Amino acid sequence: MTEFKNKRIAVTGGAGFLGSFVVEKLRERGVKEIFVPHSKDYNLVNPEIARQLYADSSPDILIHMAARVGGIGANQANPGRFFYENMAMGLNIIEEARKHGVEKLVIVGTTCAYPKFTPVPFKEKDIWNGYPEETNASYGIAKRALLVMAQAYRAQYGLNAIYLIPSNLYGPRDNFDMETSHVIPALIKKCFDAIKTKQKEIVVWGTGKATREFLYVENCAEGILLATERYNKSEPINLGTGFEISIKNLVELIVKLTGFKGEIVWDTSKPDGQPRRCLDTTKAEKEFGFKAKTPFEEGLKKTIDWYREQKR
Image 1 (cartoon, one colour):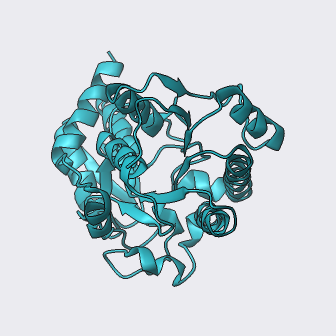
Image 2 (cartoon, helix red, strand yellow; image 1 turned 120 degrees about the vertical axis):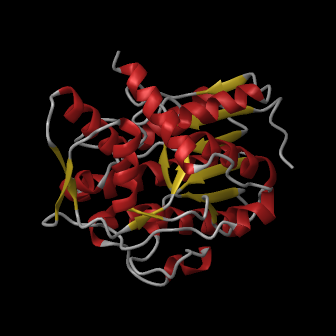
């Protein structure tokens, strides 16, 4: 088991949505030396800057969550950028971890790495059984490649790198920018905007038939720290809830919770993305005792309440 308290820990992406919760939980565990590089100061796509990060922080443990991310629209608009920046950041972080002899490297991956038609629930062993869903394949392949690099560096250099695959995240502090947000914050914002401007309908992408699994951000942060403390193997591990919901049912639930009274219009000219997405979470519970605790509707209410407060 990895003890945190007296370690120096660097958290890339630590100022972001998920990262901010990870940093809070590290502090709750008594960690005093936490280094959070901000993207404006540390562009990790640049190998020299990644090298500087390690020189400045001298981490015993590094948790890598920095990423170029977005919803279906952002992925479609920026496939080259999403591939290059995620690939480059990961390459630099892993190589410098080897050079600096870090005790442990934690890489946070993505469910977008799974094949388009993975049997549900997604088991970790299925990650190589096909090509990802086309709208986010560039991002998914880049993140998938980092799993191979982590395993290769463990085999050749003894780098203790672990790889975690969280399901779609949601919660307070999420990104509500309509250009880059994921489905839950986008829908919450659409509903509140429609209420404010007295619109009679909201337009939603796709058919509503696709399914997703959502993990409350604070639960994910706890899973990452449990894995950092207790997991030391090369195989990837899912972090999720095992709860699957259709986009249609999700939209209807958010409409109800936000109080929007208008119509839902489905723009079927837009893509659904991956047909189904739900993770097998038995391995995380077995290996390091992780089980998501926040029921989905409760997490949604907390997210909506947080957004409502921000708008006041």
